[in-house]
Length: 247
Ligand code: BJW
Image 1: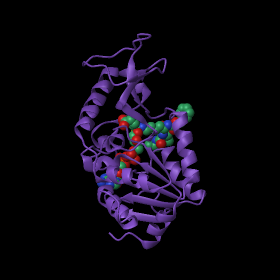
Image 2: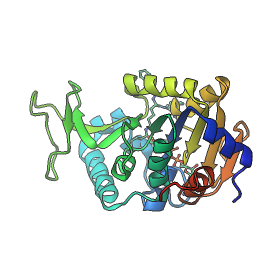
Image 3: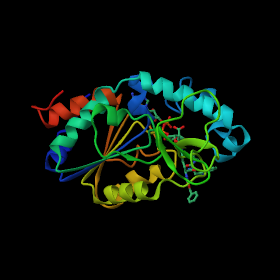
């Protein structure tokens, strides 16, 4: 992979860089994506049975068991070279915003700060009725209940048909509109409203870069489609742009 010189120059001069990540950035850490054929979660599990509010009210135990399995899986995973390269990129850019659709916490564990979490986090649970947030998950295999009102707790993630956290979405929209360079990394760009962010950045004049081994509906619109795994391309891009950068 050769990183285009024009992109390197844009990046060196950029005052504001925004990055949107999806499940693909964690794929090289061993965390399954959603929509990749064969290996994606939705190839094995039905999202309608696991990732909607209706599914939760129908069978909360099934949903909790599935999320407990996912949480265990992600707790055993380690950040990869792609996550680490973004930590270093943040140090090089005057205004850097990291927006993720991921709930795995790997950006934070890599050292990224102030990550905008569009779809929540496996690090928290919340009351299904009152929206009271709880750091961590109650232990044990049964159905956890809210310490305040006794209603069911649920994972603090955003399911299909649910609104994204308003503050996070607003911050993401603002960053997309203000960006000089916008990266869309490891996302199929199929899930609204996150999928609109790169287009919003383009409309507001950003240079948009996609990093993905596969084509997505966005690929034909972006300025620089970089085809390949994020864990290889991001460190390369970092070194080509800032030769003294770690790692
Ligand atoms: C690599 C790589 C490597 C591999 N390096 N890359 C019709 C019916 C029902 C709903 C809708 C509908 N039409 C539209 C909607 C709206 C819906 C939506 O967009 N659905 C589409 C799927 C059609 N959106 C919503 O419902 C959202 N809410 C909403 O719209 O609210 C409106 C509202 C307003 C006001 C009041 C009420 C409502 C919410 C969406 C929530 C999504 N939730 C999930 C689950 C989160 C919790 C959890 O993790 O369990 O979020 S679904 C899942 O998809 C997860 C992800 O964050 C999200 C995006 O997936 P992502 O990250 O792009 O992963 P993949 O697998 O799709 O792609 C991975 C990519 O990586 C691939 O391209 C690979 O090639 C690549 N890759 N290896 C780089 N090494």
